Length: 83
Image (cartoon, rainbow, N blue to C red; front, side, top):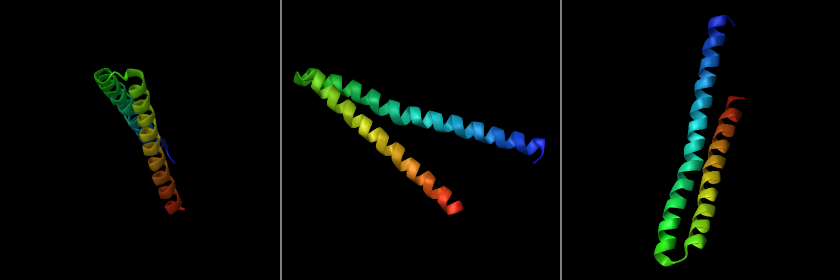
């Protein structure tokens, strides 16, 4: 490989890594933010504030890890198809 190909490959890997990082922030952060916001709102309205927020945070964690595992299995399948 020449220098130009290596630079192109490095750039592509950096772009993919940054994109993946942003996706993980959204996959983990967005459900957590929504769970904390709505958990507090619902908890205060029903006078069950800590319990509701904790339950919604656990649900957000489960949803986040389910999405991560689904993406992992898809990527693994693509790598197996390449071989």
